[in-house]
Each structure stands twice: as structure tokens, then as C-alpha cells.
Image 1 (cartoon, one colour):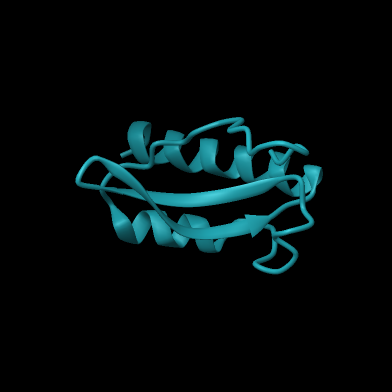
Image 2: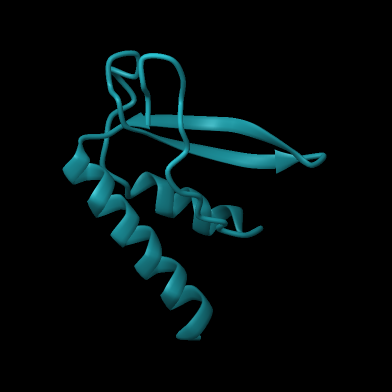
Length: 84
């Protein structure tokens, strides 16, 4: 979440090492790669390299998009880890 002074993280979803799963999931999220400077809500896809987060992509989201994306990610992770 962007405030006047800083970016504040709201949630983190550890996806794991399955890059194909992560790419498919990120591609299915709502939001836009445009309007990043104006949007107060952003979804950031990061990957750890040598223990440090590397930013891969950003999406600007409305509050409705953010809620949808959090639900989608939670369901996908639940299915991946419990419904084998």
C-alpha cells in the first residue's frame, strides 16, 4: 500500500520454488501494469536470489482487484498443498 511517505507491505504469499506455478498464478491476477505511480494498491511479484528479494513485476490494483487476487492466491495455494 502506498502512503504519502512510504510503501507499506500488507501481505506476503510464499509461493515456493515452482516457477511455472507462480507465473501462471501471477498471470491470472487482476490489475494493470500501467498506472503504477498513481495507484495506492500494488501487487509485487518477487523472487529471492542469494537471500535478497528481486522485484519481477508490479500490478496496480483497485481494492476489489486486491480482494479478488488474495482470494485467488489463497485458493490456489490451498489446492496445491492439500489436494494432490
